[in-house]
Image 1: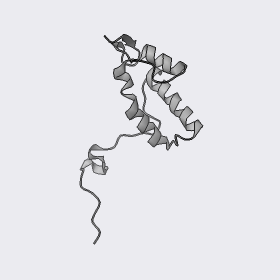
Image 2: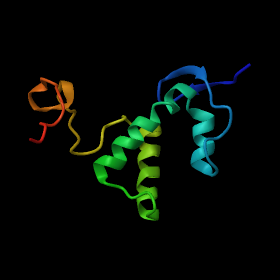
Image 3: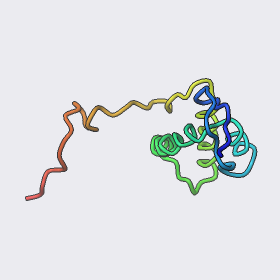
Length: 106
């Protein structure tokens, strides 16, 4: 039987994580207040942040930035996207027409 938590991210009672996701106060806070469903949203957000800011995860300062972003993602007033981020058009190309690979070399 899984434990439930009142998820502060999704604002409802949901199944919680089986254990803290990592050691320390933030890991414990996530364990106590964030559902598994909400925590499963983090990897996509993490990739977006790393790519948007060009973070090198070997750099301790970059890891601290990501940790701060994680805390804001789960516990901030709103889960805003990184400053300056805009969604790609449908299909991932300007104009949203999708399509095809790079032109072939002749």
